[in-house]
Length: 353
Figure 1 (cartoon, helix red, strand yellow):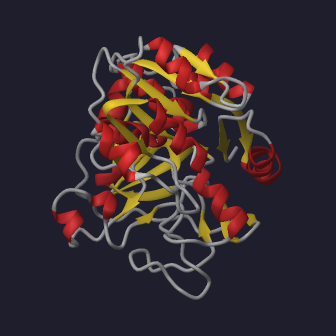
Figure 2: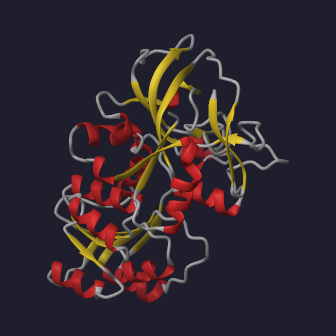
């Protein structure tokens, strides 16, 4: 079968590899669409970083070294069921929660398996990936999506990331939420906030992404922080009370400071973006003196079913965030290079054929 394999920094190859076989307790899936994620971009430009294996060191759970099949944001159709699998049928449209966990570490034992000490990702750490014609996955990670179109379903994984972050906060109907960054995660955070009945204010430097935030309906107010005063606008929109919650989806140090400045008393800043460098925070003036909370979240744990229901119920519309669809043969030129050079894309989906 054909698959996109990751060999290391700036080295992706479309190759023929052996088709995986179904085992007891597993499901064979034909991937339909796979989204290119920010973590994929980091791997491509910077080389293997944990939880990716290297050519010498295998991932502890997959046992694989490079190369590995790429792709962890994907939807597909069930082709075959392994012995003992229940609750799924051949032909079902599904998404995969692309995790590898040991199930024995303290985090796993208390249900926070997204914090597993040996965490790995299907499509990053081994065990196949969404950028292939077939993949075999343990049934526990496979979620039916019903009649959600398969292109939109490929965005359930990042939606689960956004939902997990929002659920850790006190975000509630009638409140005001500020979001820094209108990339895929920022837009999806705003979508979840709108679904929960919050007023949303999005700060974003890219004009195209600001327009997407507004046209998709996930933002009540959009702000260009390079030419507008975000704090003044939030104050005006809240009659001086400021935001109840704020979300860093940009991964830039100045955004953290800006978001802390727009929080009201007892507000919470939730960091969802990955920061490559340490960020300085004045604990006394920016947190303590206003009883504010600084939190962070990563991935998801038992969030996929709720994310799917948000879409099926019509509370979240994923269609506006799909900005391009490409073929696997063009993944470098039309995918990775385009995302690197331009902020105009939100989500690029890749299919094998």
